[in-house]
Image (cartoon, rainbow, N blue to C red; front, side, top):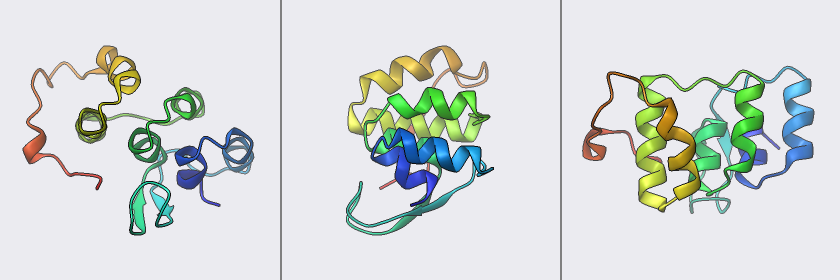
Length: 112
């Protein structure tokens, strides 16, 4: 199981084990088909949590060093908007980069 897969299914034990073994919380990794989408993808753990509407693992990832830069913020914001993930939108709102007053999701890389 990858860290991306563990966060997609909210497997805290697997995510914790992988993070303790030194896995980078920002590194994209495989997400098997059927967990969020119908095809296999390579995405970050934060993206998987957002796509699966699993906000719980997000704070654990942040505590272990996950970063949300300007590009990642836009991807996460638009993914949360598409999934109507209100918990993630509330989590992201105070972390909005000052330069990101408005986001045009039509121009942002979609997760699915």
